[in-house]
Image (tube, rainbow, N blue to C red; front, side, top):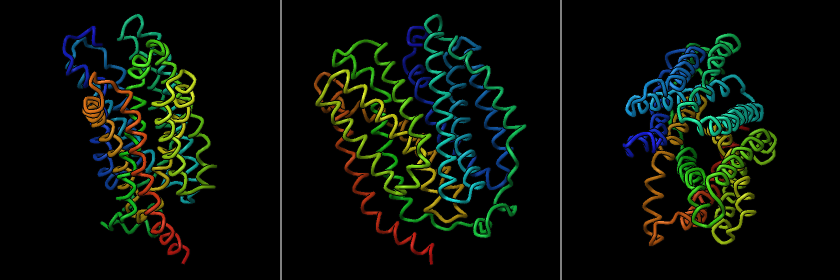
Length: 364
């Protein structure tokens, strides 16, 4: 893309700007979930994503591609918010709900692994070829239409008696603690997601091919841990997040102090895997800690925060690299993000007491 278009700002938007529209899509469809059934919204969001992705490279114009990428982000954010809210409304038992959220994220990660490999092969011929892989996504629309049951809005009387009491109950302090944790933890993962190629180059580990292997390993780790998430969450509950924060933090710190290919491979698997687990945890956890009438809102806001965190991070990382290294290297930022993990860890420990109080009140 950078070689195809002489407009670095526009190409940067094509690469990462869709994250901003994940925010907009999730917020818009969270509002719409109070007015329309989730199946209709899922059909609409899937169509937006599929059509924009299939036709993204139909016109050889950088601004047209920017517009299509924006619609892809809108569709991605909307689809994720609606699917997670759908699962939360369909599976009322906590552990079962968590397991299915993990299965969904594992399926999405598995699809991403296949797409990443195939697009890399096709893009070696022409960058336009990578978008041809989205043509089979039409099957997603057909699948939603034929196999996803209808559930109405909470206002129409679907869900439990508590869920029907739709109002503006506060989301609660636990949700506020969680949002801060989620933003920082997403940044901890984003340094690996965005800058693994810079890390490989700065430390003489290989070229783009090896960086691609590490990226694939993060996805493989995410797929495995998302599949296992239901079992882990059943055992650990809120402590699942503590496991993820500590694991990713230590991995990032070790990547700074032990700059070997083997360490990079291990860290890629752990960081990708634990992020995949935390991503599933985030939706299962918010569905448990907010009033049941606000579950749709909390899930939509969680997806929006994910989009904001990813959109902001490249700017944050660029600033940090300029402050930590005279040559603008990104390797020191890996260490910084590992150390910053202390913040969400402390917040998780502090909020633990309030979480236990909430559980005891539910039992009563």
